[in-house]
Length: 470
Image 1: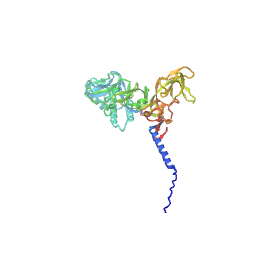
Image 2: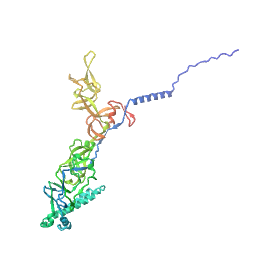
Image 3: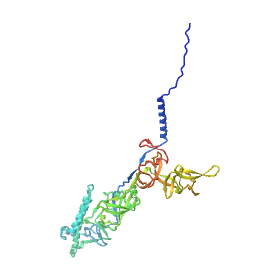
Image 4: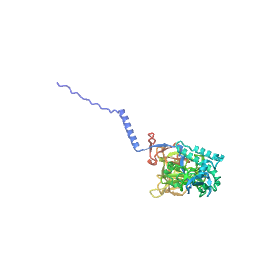
């Protein structure tokens, strides 16, 4: 007898949802969304606008440019000076003598024609020279000590020569007198007893080599030295007008702006004067020439001068130049502006229905600036040739005129929103801008650092913080 058949009963399988799978799927979808959004979002570095000022270096070492001439000796011999340095002499004024035999020089040195005692006025001159040289002493330029020594020695010889001049007549009939030749000034001017080879320098010829002071050392023309025909006797500064030329760059040019004059302080003696501004485009770069019509005699014997420019400091909103862009807008008269139903501002544009009849529509528009009654409207709002209607009037205006505004892209709303700026002053890295109206940039606004890397209304992400502020 066979075994009974067994029936197999199939149970219906129930589908169970795994919570882990759901969570993983949701995360996966979110990651895909984020990646998509990341690929379609402009990633830029932001910059927070703050109040600030532009710092421009105002200390310079400049070269003096004057109308100068070097007067040469005609005869060989020992030279003795009678005119005081840095003092005016008239045309034909006695400046020096050349003693062919050296008798006069020996008599001065031996004290035969002078008492050996300097007057109070002479002592004062020597004292002032020592004090002034002490103010300009620099440990880094010890050569100045030797220049000072030669200058003081020359002054002492010159004072002795001035005293000797009063006794020159006593040489009448003396054989030595026949060998003394007088030197006179060919023109009126300021007498200087030194040369440096830059007497013919013009402001347009100033270059880097001009400021190499090792190549243009001062030769002090000392009293009592032996000279030959053609050697320099003295230097004559013949005009009161003079200038100081300093190296310049775009930062300095922008800092000075449209100013025709700038206040200059001379470090040597704290003297201040107003210099006329002239930027030079010389062979090897930009230079600033500051011209003066006074104080020439004060610095007549100096070729290199340390100066400071008292520049007005510009303060305002400080933005990087890389953020600044230009954008074109339509111009529409402000009397055509009206309010929409939801209190938005815009314009009434004329349209045409399918049957050809006239109609109108309200077009909302953001206003980027208002200059002299003309509103600046984004060119994406209208097409050239659109006609808008003046509220409560039959007057119309055809949209076509355009103008350009300077501005930055504001990131506050999560997209690049052009904001107008007015630049006050700039240097190579930053600009100071004003904030005068509700359309302008405001302090603490967040702007796109690289304005050329974004378009108006682009969604943006700040890569500095990693936060998508869209």
